[in-house]
Length: 87
Image 1 (spheres, rainbow, N blue to C red):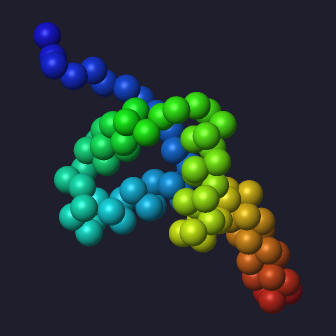
Image 2: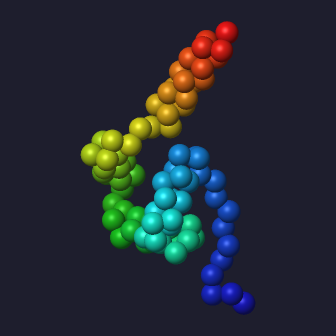
């Protein structure tokens, strides 16, 4: 029997790009190692869903991380502009 269990999860592409960048820089040896460390960090800091969400918003704001909705809107605008320039 294995000392670990396998879990399948899905991430938005923008989040995976950030994880992959950290792996490529050598900050983590693999995606799995990053995810394990992220879960450990979460478990050490977890207090309540509301407090966790407030902390995430502060971190995202300080790192200027756009939301998935903002990224999608930007991509749609770029696509629209590209199509307009081709006609």
